[in-house]
Length: 161
Image (spheres, rainbow, N blue to C red):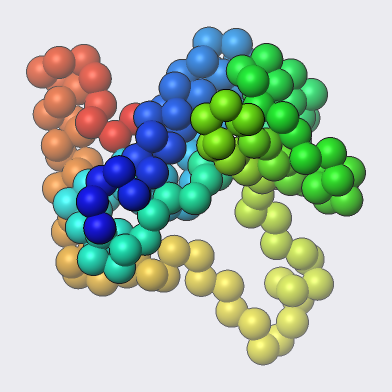
């Protein structure tokens, strides 16, 4: 699969939206496949190997910023899916840019774990256990050191998510 079919423009758009939102006092944090591509650049080949193209940009955000996020994305040309927003009571926003065809999903106040789930005796919550391998932790350490080196030398991070 060549790069044009991987929808890599989603990565650039995610970074642009985060920067522009931040300049307006809005916090958006990149999630999902785009975040993985940015945080684990040495493993991006896995997406190509599996022929996994990006399909959207996922963000986490604070629900208290919903109005500002909606206004910001609509001003950027994105059209909201009002049905999803209303049905989720503002917990999820979905937007489509009619000119570029890019989709944006915003998850407000995620991850939110229901208290009832935490109280079950047969449930153990283990966030991020998928990263608990020697290889992944080694790659995380390498990336941290590369980011630190880049910041100290050039004043910028390699993976600013």
